[in-house]
Structure formats: C-alpha cells, structure tokens
Length: 49
Length: 364
Image (cartoon, rainbow over all chains, first blue to last red):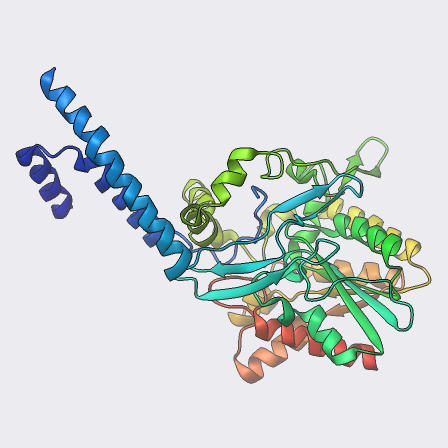
C-alpha cells in the first residue's frame, strides 16, 4: 500500500495525472497474474470461442 | 477549467500513446516470450448439427499456466477433429472410434500423445483408431457423436470415455446452456425423455465478429486462456468453488439429482447399445483421482456414479472398464499422479496409462 501512496503523491506533486491510466493497467495486470490461473479442478471448457 | 483541459490533453497525447505502446509490448511478450494459449475456435456445423472445430486453421499450440509451463501441439484434421492423421474409410482393418469430451480432445498433451493415438501406434495395422472429442460434451452428446461416426465411418468398436460431469450435463433441464450439444429433455408428468436437437451457440466467435478479432490478440488469449480470468470471476463470486469440487463436479449438487441422472443414463446407455448391437461398445470411466491422491477413496462422494455405470452396463451387456482400481494400484506403487498440478485432465502419463489398460483389454 505504501508504494501506491507514494505513486499518488508523486502524481499529485508533479502534476503527472496522465500516468494514472498506465499505473492502473499495470496494477490490474499484476493482480490478475497473482490471482489468476489457479483452478486445476474446473472443467476445461471454452464455450466463448 | 484550464487545469482540467491540461490533464485531458496530457491523457490524450501522453497516456493513450503510452498505453498503446504498453499493449504492443505485452502483445509481443505473450506471442514470443510466454506464448499465450492458442486453441482452435469451436465451430457448429449445421448440416451435421455437430459442434467441433473450425477448419480454417490446421495447427497451433495450447499453453497452460501463467508461464506457459505446458505447451501442447494440436492439429485439426479433414473431419475437423483434433487428431494427428486424417480420417478415411477403413475397409481392410478393424476401426476403433474413441468418443469423449475434453479428455479425448486432449489439448493438454501433444496431439500424438493422446491415448487414442497411442492405442493406434500399438494396434496398427490390425486396427485403425480415430478420436472424436470436444470439451463440454456429455454422455448425451456421445450418443449424437456415435451416430455421426456410424454414418461416416462405420467403426467396429466404439469406446466411450466417461468422466464424472457426463451425466448431469446430459439433461437439458439441468444445463440448458449446453443446447449446442444433444441433450435429453425430461417430461416429468409422463416420466419420459426426449432428445433435443443441437442448436448453434450464437455467442461463440463463429457468429460474433468482435470475439474473432479479440481472439487474435495474444494478450487477450493470455488473460482468458492462461490466467483463466473468467473462472477467477466465478471463484470470487462463489468463494472458492474448487473446494466444493470432486472429480470435475460438485458432488453435493449432483447427488440431489441422482434419480433423474440414473434414469437418463439408463436411457442413454440402452439407446447406444441398441443402435450398435452388432458392434463392440466399451465404456471407460475415469477414477475419482483426487480421492486416490488424498487417500480418501472410501469417503468419495462419487461412488454412486461408478455403481450406477457398472449396474447399467451389466443390465445392457455393455463392456465396462472402471479406471479406479488400476489407477489406485499404480498411484500406490509409483506415487505418480495422472494429471499435472496445473490442470485436472490427464497428462502424458495419464494418457499413456489409459492406453496401456486398453491395449491389455483389447488384446485379451
């Protein structure tokens, strides 16, 4: 959480809010990589494609 | 106002191009460094009412895991199934058709490492072996597949590869979302089943342009196929569905439908046997493998399914191979699981094991 706070203050102080979308996308990807792909039991079904 | 405009200008001129470059880098990364899973698209063939694979792509690789730890080659043949060779009319030897779901589709092993092909390697030229597998298919769809196989290739032996979710998913009222497969519809007042006609699934990429476009992106395929984000959502909603699973079903939910499942399975096995009375019909049933690994086989909630299959096969004189005892014996002896830690389907060892069981059985 500390790093997120630091990033926020960095963006605020330097007025670099344009960085926010990039940080959000990278953060989401990180969360997905950590929590995703964990189900070995669920059936292998890809009806979407 | 001026400040807001400045932020918006920065987002437009700096953030968006940065994001685009980021996506481009991710796209290249998931194409060449950690290759995203790239399985062939499903395709509903209206003339046959058959859901198999699109014919436009012949081969590729499915990868499994965050780091693409498993990489398996697939090949779509002339009849749109994942198999190493093209199918042809077999006249001078006996033909075995192996029918199943994702275990026979077998995207988690190389196409020449799945058990029907291993069986072929061992039994050819006395026998030819073809495989017909599509993930999500259930016992009712196996009936549909057997008719399709009989119409086109007229095999001498039909092997039905059964797993635990094959029973309940055969019933339309329990799984109406599987309407693209043949299912049984139950009429409660008359206590009879009728067969549904498979209908196309209009939400698939076959019918939806944006999905076809999206699927071309390696980054998207990584999220969807490797990280399994759609399942992540389900897991969060259901609070960890995996804990409730045994085999590949929720045994408590399925047990509630036991009577209906028994009736429908009886109907399906009886119909398969009646329609193939001149052929050998063999049902092969996967073991409750996770109970074997945990040494909790006696407490498995799936026993009734094995009892049910044994009794129904006895009733209609169908050949039946239950993999529970041989798998248990092998696991106790070698301590080797039949699937990887990343996926519950059989891995190469599992396919090899089942192939050997069938080679022994067929040569007796």
